[in-house]
Image (cartoon, rainbow, N blue to C red; front, side, top):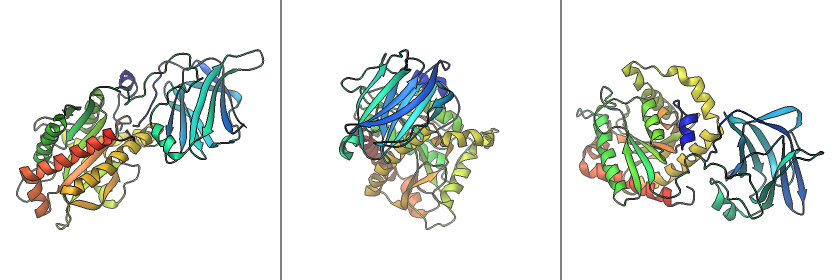
Length: 398
C-alpha cells in the first residue's frame, strides 16, 4: 500500500485493479522477445540484460496474461516484435508508470501458467525470463482471473514480488469508504420542499455505515461526517489514504422531467453512456469552483489516466460491483431503466480503487422525494447497498 502513496499523489480514479509496484530508475535492458510452441505448450521468452523481479496475473473478457517488471529500457534493434504464436494472439509492452514496465499477452483462448523461471546469461545468450502457457477451460481461467498468480510448481523468481496495489490485505477487514455527496457551501440539488441533497446523502451514508459495521467484517469510513464542504480531489485522496478496497459516492439527482424517478449507478468511462449522464457529470465536476478551485486544467491528466491499463482494470472491478448493486437496489427500490450507466465523475477516478457513484433517486420527483426524506426509505436504500457490498467481497470476482 505504501507504493500507492508514492505513485499516486495526484487526483486520479480505478482495481484493478490488480497492480505491481516497483521503485527506482531503470537498470535493466529489454533485449528481445521470443515466442515458440512445443508439445502443445506456448513459451514466451523475454531476453534481458540481467535478473528481474516479476509478477504475473490474468484478466478475463478478453483473455489476457499480464507480466509486470521493473522499468526496462528497450535497446536499439531489440527483437521485441516477435510474431505471435500458439496461445498468444497478440501482445504489447511499454512503460506502464515510473518504475513499472508491463507486457500484456492477448490470448486466443483460456490459458494457464504452467511454470515461469529465469535463466542466467551465458556467453551466447542473454538473461531470460521464461513463461510456459498451456490450454485450460474457461472455468479454471476465471478462478484465477484478476489475482496475482502463485508461482506454479517448478517456477522460480529471485525474490518475492511485492503484493499488488489494492490487494495487499488478504486477511482482516475490508475497507469501505462512503462519500456523502456535496456538503457545506455546496448544497447539491434542492427539492421543492426545500430539502437539500447534502442532507439526504449524509443521512443515508450514516445508515449505510452502521449496516456495514454490524457484522464486524468491514472498516467503514465517511469522507465527511458533518455538513462541511469537501473538494472532490480531497474525497479521492481520503479513500486512497484509507487504503480503501471499495469507494461508494452517494448522491441524489434532479431533472426537469418530474416524472423521471429511480436509482442509478454510475461507473467511470471515457465516454458517458448517454447525454443525461454526461450533463450530470459536468454539473457534479464543477462543484469545486464554488470554493474557488477550478479543476478544468486537469483534463489532459485525466485523459491520459483513463487510457491507462490500471484505470481500465479498476473500471472492470467497479462494473462488477455495479452489476451486483443494481439487482439488490431493485428488490426494494425503484431503479432507472438501464440503471448501470457510465460518466466521467471525478470522484470515480482513483486508479487503484473500485468506485461507484449512486444516485439514490430524484428529488425532483414527488414519489422519490418522499422515499429519500423518510427514515424507512433511507434504511431500505442503505440495506440494499450493504447487501451488494457483501456479495461483492464474497464473490470469486474480487
